[in-house]
Length: 386
Image 1 (cartoon, helix red, strand yellow):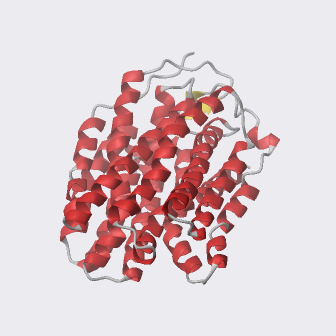
Image 2 (cartoon, one colour):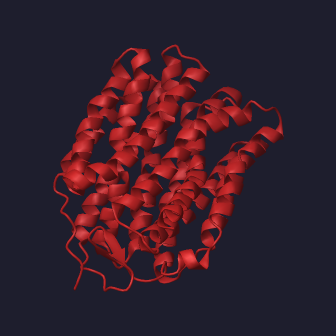
């Protein structure tokens, strides 16, 4: 029962996060077919990211006060509908609005779903969360293939094909009272798991603030890379298929890194795993920018894996730093700080317009070292109250 429950959460997460990956996968199409500049195209990424950054902690706070299992399928539907409406091509403002609707759906989904994974019956620490995050990463990885396949169908039908994962996700995420019982209760960590009937442990707000800064830096690096890697490969002589393959390698690496993070944390501990992963990410991003094109795919996968090893661990660390406000912590670590990375995309795009994509991506190789320095001082959360 527990495995089926975790699998359902992971599959539902995949159906939602495919739309986060679809925004980046649509950038080359929007640049070539609608004549958007790099800065304008990255503004669309900003629309999805910025809305999530503002709204997601609010949904997290609401999830802490009231169980809202109905919000999960509703937000899944909004995420898919927004991306499908991009195909209407009613002008740049309408495109931004459609992507913003998708971003709103993604924002509403994550805090409620992450809290349900952690506090539901049989919920466990970073193990269950790593599988949940893996589902999202698989959705990211499949997004370029979904976009290329759907847009190969001419006319509106191709765009509406992009809504199919949302339809499946709605079915997977329909509320099940037996499964969701306890999702609205206060939960406490016990040996990596949570016990819904226990008193929450003490808060560590300074550690949570430091963790949030780590996630911001990581977000700028990954979102910048995912937004422009397909254009970078095209700039180096690859075609649209090569660019989509590079984006797929990036997202596939993120899926592997997420699953690996839970296993490494069991061996090294969460804090050590997080800062070691960031130390490995810097040379991998440098390899994307300086090694020959055939090696770019391998370096992209390695860079994404290193940046995503800490992903689920940072979520559970945030929940344990704020044990009485897990929804809020999930909204910040999954939403606010992650989405802030999208704010930097227009600046990266402006530099790419003025110089080249490679020049614009150079600072991204340094950011993992900043995250490494910050993450080295992250403490292990205090044990729960007796």
